[in-house]
Image (cartoon, rainbow, N blue to C red; front, side):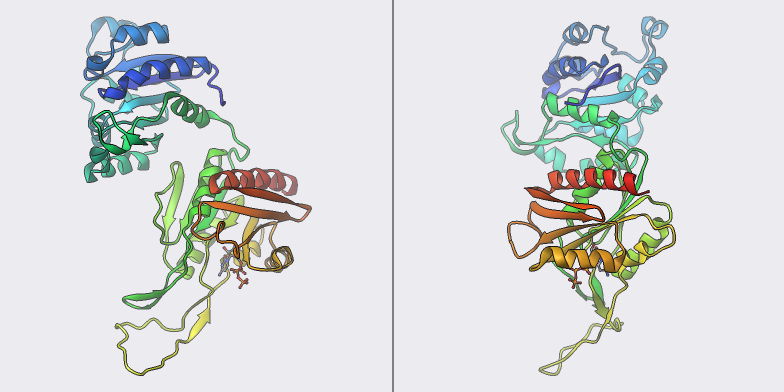
Length: 400
Ligand code: CTP
């Protein structure tokens, strides 16, 4: 359990049924050592009384923007400066819309504009409202401005619907808040990660690609960001949401991925190549759609650049980590690949087992580096990613 010792947490409560859980959240935050002050919107006060949150936080609850007595004590600017974190739980669809529009029409939205502190949102709303395109766009805007989201969870809702939109439970929110402050093993390091497949165009409507889901690379990006690294993800086309606190750059082909990586490589400490880069691309991209004709045809392919080997062989190269997917002789091939490409570390996985690897949520890998190796037992890709990040932190610190 990560602590919040001596952190000033400004808790914003907006008007949703989940507001009743805010009482427990205040208790959880205090238990972890935080100082808590609460701002309630008018809507929130319909669901829970300020008195409850005052008693639990040990401080008067702030409700009005234009309140002469409040401005003499702790007005909106003082509150905004006081906060180490602005945590809004529940964050209703309306509040998210007002924040995204940059409104300052009540105390909470005004403080959100006025504070330099990071903002953590725990959304809570009906599943259809959460899925609505307007909410999706508002959330994307807030994320792009640096807000971090915890939840919403999926399940049965107060209104009887089932789906995503339920506010996360207070312990999960408190943990997410604490993690924002956690000084991780990659604090201050700059990490670049490639993920997903590449697509190699044949003509305007067709391409060559592979089944990589990008899940492992995205899990690594999340783990690196959680560990305190400034993380950039260079991602081929995947069906995954860009992780919080990660700068995500979408690319399509291997050549585009190489260009992005070369532009970033000189400015990074650690380079992790998790992408399933197409080894070949069509020798020519036809400008017009290829029409069918003969019963047989053939394609001429040319080798794509090896992105990882290119970065690993730069002068002053970053600490380079590769992946080796093999069906047999796993460790021998992986070791050979590590040497051939001049890598500092390689993560080997056996793709003959359908329960791990491409598309699945689990993985089981052996990590090899110059001075040793570690077998990571089968686990979810997020867990494996955290363990790999720990190993990278340890080995790169010893190496460089
Ligand atoms: N890689 C890369 N650029 C390429 C090909 C691979 O950056 N053009 C990286 C992958 O991201 C991965 C590692 O290199 O980290 C995989 O090496 P590779 O030699 O392609 O291994 P396999 O895909 O297993 O291919 P093969 O066994 O055919 O050599």
